[in-house]
Image 1 (spheres, rainbow over the protein chains, first blue to last red):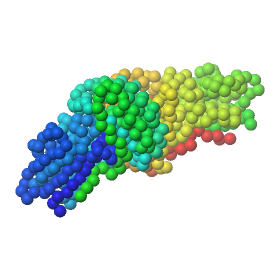
Image 2 (cartoon, helix red, strand yellow):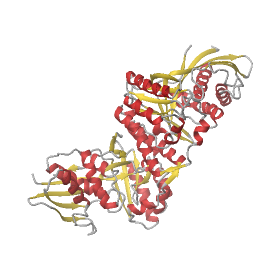
Image 3 (tube, rainbow over the protein chains, first blue to last red):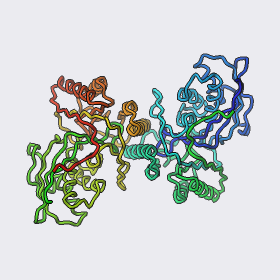
Image 4 (cartoon, each protein chain N blue to C red):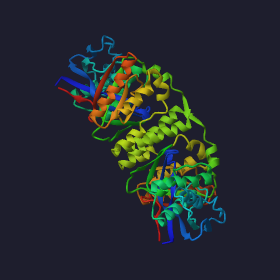
Amino acid sequence: MNKIKTSAPATVANVCCGFDVLGFAVDAPADEVILTLRNEPGLMVKRIEGDGGRLPLDPKKNTASVAIQSYLNQLKSSQGVEIELIKKLPLGSGMGSSAASAVAALVAINYLMNEPLSRKELIIHAMEAERIACGSAHADNVAPSLLGGFVLIREYHPLDVVNVPSPPELYCTLIHPHLELKTEDSRKVLRGSIALKDAVAQSGNIAALMIGLTQHDYDLIGRSLFDVIAEPVRSVFIPGFNDIRKKVIDAGALGFGISGSGPTVFALSKDEASAERAGNAAVAHFKEVNLPTDVYISKVNSEGAKIIS
Amino acid sequence: MNKIKTSAPATVANVCCGFDVLGFAVDAPADEVILTLRNEPGLMVKRIEGDGGRLPLDPKKNTASVAIQSYLNQLKSSQGVEIELIKKLPLGSGMGSSAASAVAALVAINYLMNEPLSRKELIIHAMEAERIACGSAHADNVAPSLLGGFVLIREYHPLDVVNVPSPPELYCTLIHPHLELKTEDSRKVLRGSIALKDAVAQSGNIAALMIGLTQHDYDLIGRSLFDVIAEPVRSVFIPGFNDIRKKVIDAGALGFGISGSGPTVFALSKDEASAERAGNAAVAHFKEVNLPTDVYISKVNSEGAKIIS
């Protein structure tokens, strides 16, 4: 076999109280990669679909090829590869767009090379792509996109990635207002130090969220989904953020927050109907301020990136 | 029935990465209270055994009577009560001594009043005793002493207390060096703000500890038991703290830290033999610096305070 098509899902990093340590994957949208082994060495990004011409074809700059190069370097392989990338995730949206492309590419090359590495072993190569895409080799999008479900990044040195069991019925609503925010800009507004009492509050919530997820306690999940660290400063980029929260929670969602560093916002709900009502409430809000939106409703994804054909 | 004897166990608050949000109870030691209903109104602390005369008999200052008074106020009861307190926990040790007395007293009065309140509803009254004893109405000792096991305090306003499932086999070694530290002094060394990166590290560890406990993953429990917030400043009060940690971990313990605000230190182990080796290692260390110690080894307690007779 020398050709394969894979997909890797969008992800929500941070997850309110999980700032910089937690992410989860959703069923949709997902980026797709078609990978073809070449007879001569070298990586080639043959075409990119769905990016409006904005992503680089240069294999040293494209996240899919950067991830594959890092992978091949570990294997000391000079295998040549041709990459076709079908973007389904909006760029710069806070839904893990760069991560999804890198992950789809890695799962593809690993399959074609007869899977010498495990999913967890692919994470560091996807992180190299994140370094190129946004300046920091973070794992809170790539790990859930690879592994599925909720994933905790306990530590980076050495990398310690923990799967977090979660309820089978958990729906995510992603609402992407058509604003573009760079991760770098969104990081700049964060302060280097925070009040001890805020750190304690965040600890209480992330710990409670872990109990809520593992014990399938929806009420506790809802009570824990607050962020006292990043959200208070980042939410200024999202017009009427607190109003949206109120409307989405009133519509029946368990919790609401910024996806990654925004501008996409997300809601978690315990059933599909609530997830849809939450989406409608947020869309109506953004319509009032003349911001077009895209809405994606799907289950929390449990398997991560997959082989399509 | 107008007389009862109860006991309430020692507790470890903070638990490394669980600074100000987590505590757990141990099987031993435990304070005991003998409560007798009186025919006339008023609270009386009749005798205290085991405190070397250091605890107040004044019912407005003793944690057992303060807790009972708060409880009776809620019930709008003028029931008179006579209290005998048998202290088994060392005072000012960081093992939740004031909490245990208050909890034993509350479980006793609630039983004699036909249990109008649940264990969780007793927490706020035990917190009033903590306010008297150490100036802040914290719950991370009283809640585990009442409920047993690991208990998370997610939030104080309103109080949200969460039971954390944990492995059936988990042993605690408490090593109490004969130093006395006041909680107030130990709090003074804490800074009002901390680095964002430390808050993130603490979040990763407390989240991972919750997964380790609920999933019975001993390795993960061990990897998570670190405190980057309070321990670096508080450990200066404990001679050779980092050496003790190394010796205790080398002896087979999963993790090691300061119990509450110290000076007692604790180790968690997955079997009794490791818990004993950890205790021996710590005792040997303190002997080198001429500090006498008391050591308590028991299982993590799963039921909390109990009726003795």
